[in-house]
Structure formats: structure tokens, C-alpha cells
Length: 366
Ligand code: PMV
Image (cartoon, protein in one colour):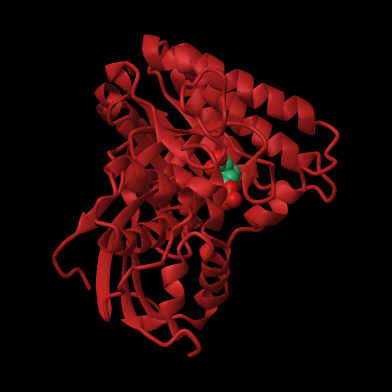
């Protein structure tokens, strides 16, 4: 299973149900080695690896209702019960991108109900959790049409479809650690879907804590697609892709040995490299805010003085993810509450941790 054609679906001889609905809860993820730069169709320029989160998630139900092939599709998306016209273009584009692989969708009106565990304007991107949840609901319908489908194929195709919506979404199907992108050191790794890392992970990485500090709750200043595009012709692009693949190789060793000093060096270096790419692109973007830098300084100072193995990472924004092992929850949490929260907008944070991945709801959620 390594080519896109492996994910095509043959409709001949299949009888489609009149209606159906499926609900999935799918998590967000935080990259340790970052994906930044891609080619068509959503092929990453380097491999990346992430923790799947357990608290930051999206719950989505799709109602499928049969229609004639010639009839125009009704596509309605509700966020917390309210119709969101503004979500339509992104979902319609996603459906367009995946239709070759899920041709049965052409026969259905779609009613989508969704809820995020985090506030929409919190600066936490909902694309990874949102698009992976959609992909899983669609895969549940495909499974009904092809009951013999195995679990590995189900998850791989869900990841494959999610990737076509938003690259990092393909790392949100399974947990706790997922690699996306072909890499010589990871068996079965692929540019087309994420795979769960299974080979003896050190127990310190189980339920690894991630306190997400909401430094800036605004909408994203740079969309991911613009951001990835900034890597085209970027003077440091090739070196960056090489560095990321190199860091992934080093991190794989760390994930086995549990060497947290090296973990912190790699993870912080990755976050700063991602931001360095944005600061040195044309046009350039400085997405960190003054308080992002203050928080980074305080984390480094605390680490030096306390010997706690805490580090930070950043997404393409100002919010800070504070990462640390579960056994250090008490001292690090006390430090965060007294020193870092005052630097967050409205003192807001999300207490998260690495977790097991997406799950299906069999009872009614909405
Ligand atoms: O999945 P996208 O296209 O939104 O890109 C995500 C990019 C980063 O979050 C900055 C890095 C990553 O690997 O998740």
C-alpha cells in the first residue's frame, strides 16, 4: 500500500444505502519535527513527527442522504448547532480533492455537525482535527459499502484523505506518536499518509504533557497554504528540508532512549527553525509576539534552575506549547501558573497531553 491508486474505490456492483450517519472524535496534534513546504498534491518536502493530543479535538457527525447523481449536492455545515456558511468553501474544496477516491460521495447530500473542544478563535488550528474527523466519517460509510475492509486499510485511507484536506491532519488518526513523510529510518513511512510509531518508545513519552499557552487568540496571520508556498524559492529551503529529515532521525533515537536533554534541543530547534523560515521569506512574517519570547526565556531559565525537563514548541503562530514528562506535572504546572499565565491573553491555557488517537461515537453525540 504505497501508491495513491491503492486508495481508489470501485463502485461497480455496489448498492448504496438510502441514508446513514457516522460520528467521530478526532484529535489535534503538535509537531515535534515540523512540516513546512510541500508540492502537489499535498506531498511534504520533508518527513515530520507529532504527538497526537488528547484534549484538543473535534467531534463531527456526517449525515448522508441519497440523491440522484444529476441533482446538485446539498452541503450544510453546522458548528455547535449554527449554520456556518463560511466553512463551506473549505469543505467543498476538500470533497472535490478526494472525490476520485470516494466516488460514492457524489450520490449523497451531506449534513455536517461539528464541535471543537477549544474555542474557534483561540488561535488553535482546527484543520487537523476537523479534516481528520471528516475523513473518518467518510471512511465509515466506505466500510459499510465494503465490510471486508481491514483496520489497517481503514486508518491508512482515512489518513490519506485527511492529508488531501490539510497535510498535518493525516497525523491525527492514530496516537501517540505519528510520522508522516517517507524517511529511510522509518519502515513503511509514506508521503501519502501518517503511520503510528510503534517500535519501543520510551515510557517517559507516554501521556507527555502539553500545556498550550494562548498568547494571542486572533485568527492566524498567515494561512498554512501561503506559509508552505513561501518555501518555494526560499534561499534556505533545501537546507531546511535536509535539517528536518536529519532531526527526525535523531529524534527517533531519543524516542527510544528517553534522553530528554536531546529531545528538548531538537524540539526547540525545530520550532525556531520554522519561525526562522517565515522571518526570512519574501514577504516575511514575524508570528511570535513579545510575550512569546518572554515565555521562551522564562522556560529556559526555569529549566536551568530547576532541572525540570521542560521545553517549548510553536506552531505557525504566537501560542506556546510547553512540553514536559508527566512525572514533572506538579512543579512545571506550578511554574506555569505563577510565571507564564500572566503573559497569556485572558490568562487562558489548555492542559493537554499525548493521547491514543481518534475514536468513533456509536451513540448520538449532537
Ligand atoms: O497542515 P497544514 O497545511 O496546516 O500545515 C501545518 C504546519 C505546521 O503546523 C506549522 C507544522 C506541522 O508539521 O504541523
